[in-house]
Image 1 (tube, rainbow, N blue to C red):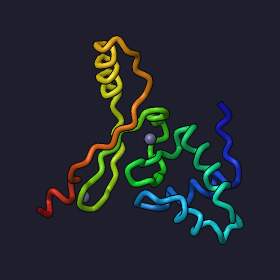
Image 2 (image 1 turned 30 degrees about the vertical axis):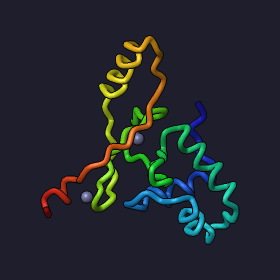
Image 3 (image 1 turned 90 degrees about the horizontal axis):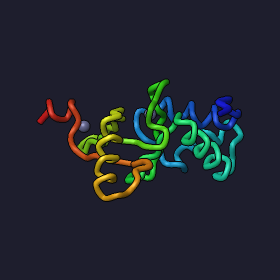
Length: 131
Ligand SMILES: [Zn+2]
Ligand SMILES: [Zn+2]
């Protein structure tokens, strides 16, 4: 797979990397309009590709995107996130055992596991300390 990023992809990725929170597509567009990217299509195209190569993940329940912080992310087709109910902090969970677990559940149903997209809700470490 070609991992070279296009200019647009680099710009979109940089915006997400700088953000501590997941961003919606229109917030990304707002940030990068100064850099000459004007159309939502360009943003979506860049996001699709960044997701495909595992540099960005989508948080479906929030309809937002985050940059993956891990160079060797194993979550290319499957993702698992822990989302804090109080501060909305998002932690990416990298656990191969999760896929193995789902795979064995599927096997029991005579089905074949392919991937998963999981969002777990709870409270994060700093919110737990403050409560
Ligand atoms: Zn990742
Ligand atoms: Zn929290």
